[in-house]
Figure 1 (cartoon, rainbow, N blue to C red):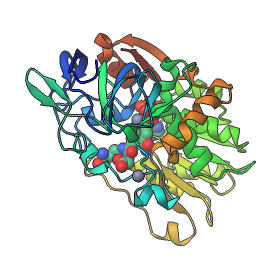
Figure 2: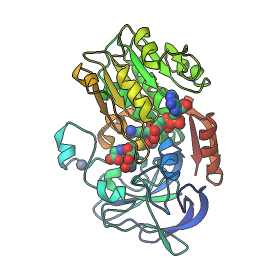
Figure 3: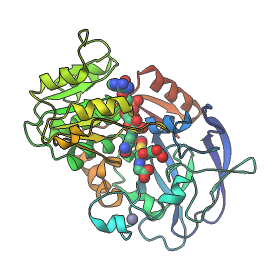
Figure 4: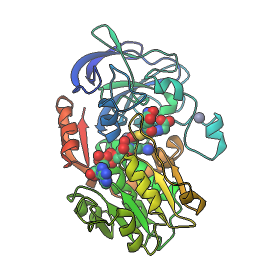
Length: 377
Ligand code: NAD
Ligand code: AHE
Ligand code: ZN
Ligand code: ZN
């Protein structure tokens, strides 16, 4: 009940590169402008693995990962007005306060209000709501959905249609929305445009379905895992290239793609996080106007490079987070669109596990036989 700590299970990562451990944790009650959520389902995104493995320059431990969560509001702190106990919600790692410079700009979905403390794994008062064995445990991306109960700020949560199944809406908290939004909000794909998608995980497949929705011409998918061909085609790709196998001696992937598109892509997307792939994506864009959109996140210390001539000759390099989506304004509509059958979500789920088997989701990701594992909390 409101005001009391809750004892529950959570998957705690005690140190960089370690497996998650199911622990009993205490979850403090929400303070002012905070919300405690009973997490029902969470997806596992490659970014959770990125930080677990120690590649994230902001990564710190011990921590409770997870940022693709859906659940029910258990209690609210003082001054919370946007959600109430019992609401079905989606957690938002990109919050929306509506009043900061970023939110008011109309130019970006990034919100600045809690970014600093969120990056440190803390609530806005610089403390954590999680303890385990007497030690504070860090939050992650303002969500920590790998806990049966979590505390988030009120700007990091949005109420959605309670009829929407939460084992699907969790995936709208990152993967599906990130790719779909990049294709339909960030890029301005016109009918017939040629689109390239590098990496056909949940993010890339979501870009493909967004591009198909926009009636793109060719949708060419590049992945080093042949098993992704069938997946890519199912979501609307027209072609698939495996650069590890399909190149002739001396031929580069950029040459192949440029030939296939009569000069390059109108829009392409990095959905891998590899800086070499990002370069290839930029250089596969059409001279004069092609835009390459970086979605993948790269390891600490990695940098992108290309010849400035690529930009002088009109290619545009940019990126986005959460598909450019403003969560509190847009998520209820996105959930409704899903309910109305306007895009696929159920099809992304390749595995389902209870919380105590969450490490299997990371193994599946490494084996390349998973699009999304959904964890039943
Ligand atoms: P995933 O592991 O499910 O998919 C990645 C795909 O890329 C796999 O199919 C893999 O075979 C392929 N791949 C890897 N290296 C490749 C290479 N060199 N060339 C071609 N293909 C290659 O991951 P995901 O969950 O879809 O996430 C994709 C990336 O997007 C990750 O870096 C993740 O951290 C990032 N991400 C960013 C945002 C954002 O808002 N910017 C949101 C979610 C995820
Ligand atoms: N912390 C990392 C970068 C990680 C990153 O870029 N995260 C994306 C979301 S990935 C979701 O799966 C993001 O939201 N970025 C914008 C932001 O403000 O963090 C680093 O390199 O420091
Ligand atoms: Zn994610
Ligand atoms: Zn804001």
